[in-house]
Image (cartoon, rainbow, N blue to C red; front, top):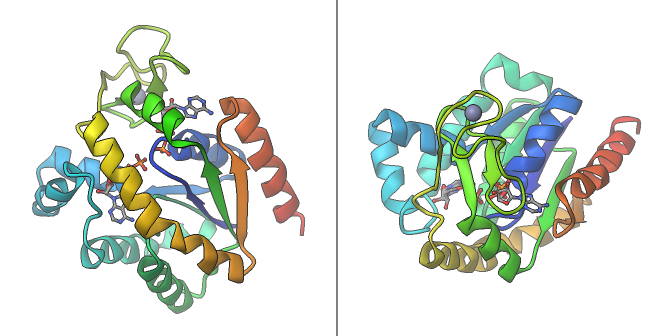
Length: 218
Ligand code: ADP
Ligand code: ADP
Ligand code: ZN
């Protein structure tokens, strides 16, 4: 099964992806995580990406598509994928179709997690991420057991540079302009499924899980 999870920044893609990869044995590919790792490692690609990320802008397609193509060409990508944060534009969706075709793979579903803007801003300003394993926490809704420490690996939690109010607003604007049109692209292919992401984490997951179980047994 190859699944795309989409939704505005802060909708809960990463949080839900963590659960989905466990239950459905999917390989989690998050372009945001790939970029943050490259920034941490100080690679040339990371330096380039950071210029865009810090402004809340999309990293140019030639960088993103190249990375995804390379990642999907490895053998472990044949066993089931969960793409998180990619594609983000109709152009990226078209590029993905081309890569998938070359690799004889196909997308089975696009799950969109939807949340209103006020709630997104509230979530993102309270988001904390593990520096070591990338796990997501939230000071308000999903606090770690010990302050500033990851429940899973004891890594240090940090506040992302791009989770400030101004950058969040810019990212939401970009989502509305550049990513929303992608919905129509996948709706026409009959792959689109939307869940109410304003519910509690476990309720959102219950809806996603039920949908994926049906899809798996089809
Ligand atoms: P969020 O989880 O808040 O939606 P991500 O971690 O997915 O954010 O992405 C963080 C940043 O990384 C984006 O604002 C953008 O700069 C860059 N990025 C991630 N994925 C893509 C993509 N598919 N295309 C362009 N830029 C991307
Ligand atoms: P995305 O990957 O879409 O940007 P995250 O999974 O990182 O979103 O979630 C954004 C923030 O909101 C995190 O701090 C996370 O712990 C929290 N969060 C995720 N889902 C929910 C939810 N259903 N209700 C409340 N908070 C949530
Ligand atoms: Zn961790």
